[in-house]
Length: 340
Image 1 (tube, helix red, strand yellow):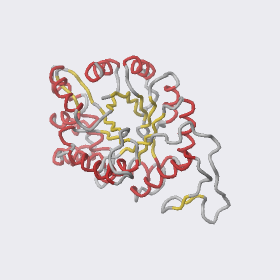
Image 2 (cartoon, helix red, strand yellow):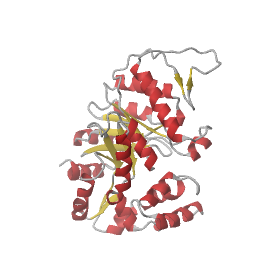
Image 3 (cartoon, one colour):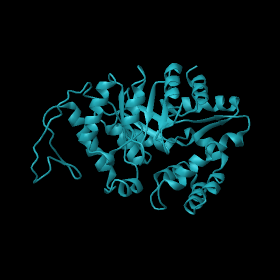
Image 4 (cartoon, helix red, strand yellow):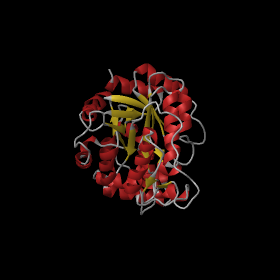
C-alpha cells in the first residue's frame, strides 16, 4: 500500500498550505502527489510548480480532462513535464461529464468509450515517436481531411516512450477499458465492501489485453477520506457536504456518474434523497441526509481503534495507492496507519 497527496483543484484561489503539504508528504514517505481540474485551476500548472519543490514524489494528474486538450497537446505537455521532472509523471486522464464538457468546453460528450480509446492511442503514438502522426478514427482524424496540414512528428525526444497513462473511470465499461488499455485506474470514491462489480469489470478488461492478464505494474488509486474522532457522527460530518456535492450536484438528474457510482454501491434510495434535496437548492439538507453508514462505506471515520481495524479492508482490497488530502495532521495519521 502506498499513499499519494491529493491537492485537487482550487476553490477561489490557490490553497495557502499546499507547499507545506507537499513538503510533509515527501518527508513522511508518500509515493506521489496529484492535482485535478474542473473549470477553474488546471491540473498541469500546479503540478509543475509544486512538483519542482520535490525530488522523489511521482507527479500525477487525477485527472487531466481529455476534452480540454487535443491528444497531441496532451502528449506535448506530458513529454515536457516528464523531462522536467526526471521521469516522474503519471498521466491520469478523465472524460469529466456532459455538464462540463458541453457547457464549458463546447464539445459533444458522447460516445465516450470510443473517444477515450482513440485519445489514448494518439497520445501513445505521439510519445513513441515512430513516425509522423497519422490517425483515422471516428472522432479524430490527423491530419485533418481536406485541410492544408501534413503529418508531423514530435520534435522532442520523450524521456520515456512508454510513459504511464491511467484512466479515471467509475462505470463498469470504463473501468474495463482502463484495465484493457491503461497502466492504472483512478477509482475516485471507493467502498471496499461494495467492490465486487469493479473486480469483475477489471477482470473483463485484463482478459482483453494482449497477452491476457493483469500486468504487474498496473495500479489502482482511490480517494481515502480519513477523520479520526471518538465521536463517530462528528467524524462523518467532515465528509457529508462533499459526498452530497458529488451525489447531488456534479451533474443533472439525467447524467451524474457519481450518483450512478453510489447506486452501484447499493445506496440508490439514499442517493436519490440526497440528489433531490441538492438539486432543489438545499445543499445543507442534502448533506444532513447523507447517512453515516454511507460515509463509513467510503471513508475511514471514527475512533482510532475503529479506523485501524477497518483500514485492513483497504489494505486487502482493490487500491494499491490511496490519495489523501490535508491538513498536515491527516497526512501524519494516514502515514501511521498505512506506512508505519
